[in-house]
Image: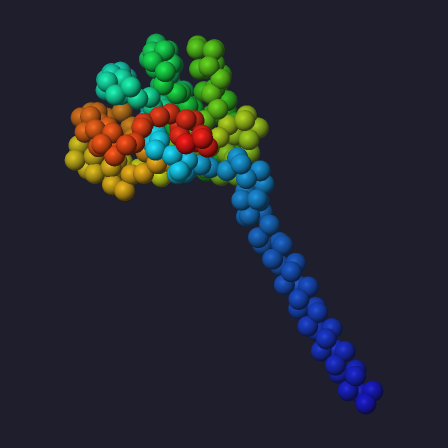
Length: 240
């Protein structure tokens, strides 16, 4: 009888040991990877605006195309619409007056890093320099304190999140990508910008000539469906 109890105790101890080892393994292997998902959830990358609204946001990532950007602004103005322009620092260096023009027109200016680097491969200091240097440049030239960061190519890491949290930035990605930097077709840009479009969508574009040509029809399509083009910040608002 005593021998049977001893065997049962050994089996119970073995099961308990396996359980403890499993718990420790889970903590070791998964805690660091899930930290970004659970810490300060409000600061996580944003892919959509308010889906209950009729607002959509057009986002232009800018490292080139100054003349095209002026024309994009003119096109938006015909509809009374505003957009968000994420500006690369080295591009701003040569186009300060363009940034001032966009601000005067009521468009939103966001941060797109300084040299279009892959932020997922940068350490904390590298991410900091890219975001901070662009922030300080635009602040010095325009007095504008930006609070939106669009990582080039959508590449980011935990370091990027931490830097933006420190600088009180929101990290902005997209729900619709026109891929207009690659596919130089007015028709393709139009199709991608309009397919399944709905309130809260963040539509990624670039200042390309074929995008500019497609823009009037894209805006017309939105208007016909009761959608309003706003800045990213306005699209994120919860009041609809």
